[in-house]
Image (cartoon, rainbow, N blue to C red; front, top):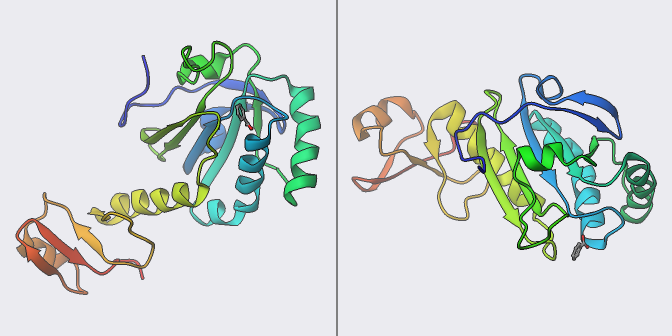
Length: 211
Ligand code: BEZ
């Protein structure tokens, strides 16, 4: 069965381009992004892994460890990684899992047989420090993901975890956030010292608390 939001994500051991890893140990007490791609030496995947490497500082600022996975073997990953570094002007130094036995792919339901019987689709999971699933995305092979959107969602998730606020449509870091329905307006006024803007009893904004 596929993973659902709030589920504890499965732990695993894997061979990667950075050596053997135990997933939970690799994540430690921070956040994680685990994402699959259909195959090595393919153009869209090359740009996705390159973009992820170029955003290394952004992931680090947010205390997020990233890991990629595909069902190709380690030697293929290593050769392809050189191409990614060359063509995308980057240094890929996060682990790429060599999931030849499809252990991770099956644990995380990354193979969708009606899309491809053998290759992983573009699955992406954001995992919280509690090892619970916070976000899952599934993209088709032909569409590269937007890694700025992944960072934006992580910003929103981290604000929710720390301050119990939600974020509106198309929210960007620095913009006002939403007081969640579980908080009364009276409590919100006490909690958010920058003020609460009540548009409707259920639609209340406050400036982003951490800036
Ligand atoms: C790619 O990663 O470039 C790709 C993979 C499968 C189908 C289409 C594109």
